[in-house]
Image (cartoon, rainbow, N blue to C red; front, side):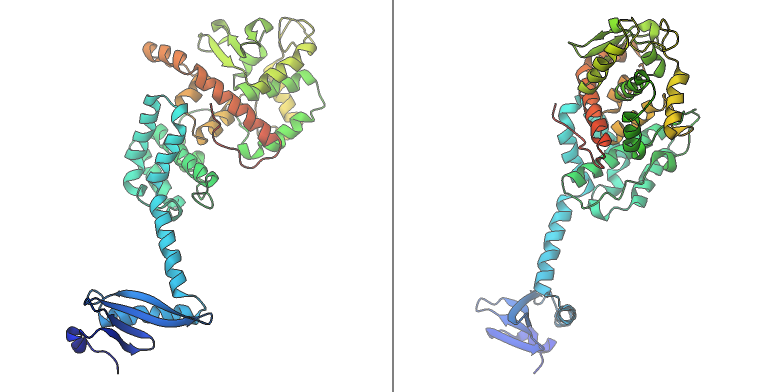
Length: 401
């Protein structure tokens, strides 16, 4: 006989009281009343808890039992399904955007100054967490992030919108590497295609996707080896082509792994100190034999007393098949884009690019505070270039200091 609502209100006899098709109410000696479903799966008899009466009514219990039977009809064990759901729910609770962002920022802490860390945390709290912070990473769609970024841009903060986007992408990249999410759905969110163009004139820059092929062609370059060395050092140091072309051996201290470009050769008329990665030092060592004791690191092959021209570098790039697609100056944009998306502090990147702070107090701070950070950044960049030249598709975001 099936159970009824009237009978259930007064039912107090301990035991199992069946409703049919395996559904029953179990009454314990202590007075507890629990819905259960008895079923068989893979030749074994099992029980599935469906809730407590009267919080779960007879009607609700029957509906839950019907749902479980539909799973069984599809060959799915409802008990195993429930356990998997609980595991997924717990995983999602641990892997919300805000929770993973906190781990990412903790992982980054030794790379950032306290002010930088606070600025990054605050930008996410203001522009991303209010709408997306509590959501599991896996449930957030590219369109959700796009909406948040566009909302930031709509306030007139275009630069901030770009930086926030780069930070969100870095969080997702870190999450993939550390197996917090299976894939990165934010890869195709590119600032240039998402944000409105600003009034700037940009030179053609090689995209990171084409970097492995370019480095392979550069390694096989059959022209003047001096030009190949110049292009490689230009990529590794992210200096301006004019700063590279005028480089003199007297400016370079291999023992200190440092290249000091004097103020008179800098666009902003301020001395620029360029940390040299192991890769950059290797290029300079190879180039030293080619410069034949001259003062210039990259002398012109036709006028030894003069440096190579920027047109020489761009002609070599065109000869490699990148005419109109890449320029010598454009490698600075490549460095900036990749480093920003990898989560490096934007101020450190800007300082390495010699974009000088106009505020004298902040400029003095930048010079003293970012020396070691920039050395770590350029070594990471040199390792990144090496990995991309080997064809690696994914490169670790961070390396220990």
